[in-house]
Length: 191
Image (tube, rainbow, N blue to C red; front, side):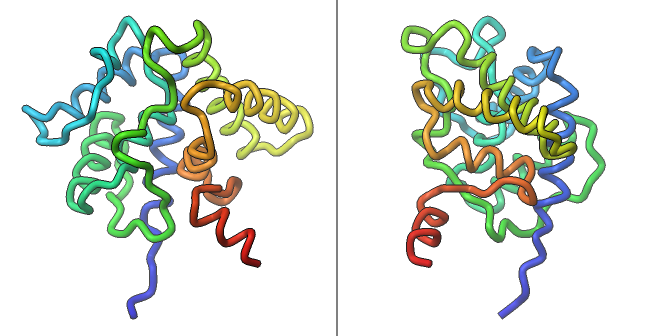
């Protein structure tokens, strides 16, 4: 049996850092998302809800990561990550394996509810969680830990944020966060 390479870790870390640098320019992240997941141009479809995402609504980093961590054919996952990295100006190698990467359901790959069902701050709260998690992962001080816990609790109370948020945290910093997807929860309860 070939040994896992975990080539996804450097690429995902580079994507997380690039997305973090867009914290003040969320429209750029939407532009990248719409370019990469345009079925006519790239052949990579994404199921939109009520015309979202769009510049008027916003997008969060977890939904962005979730778009290429759905149950896709491996060739499409690689293609989408390569396109994301090109759009973000990342020169890291494209992953060759996805060993240990949790995926989310294609029909439940949103981390926020549609316009009529979400709170005014839901997308903003997901950005705050992402930023505080990145800061805690790079500097695990008590202050950063407290900010992360507070942001996690706020986001976790939102519609469409379930165990999936732990997968999102794992995608961005796998050495700091554990995915509590079904496999992870099963492992913890069995041991």
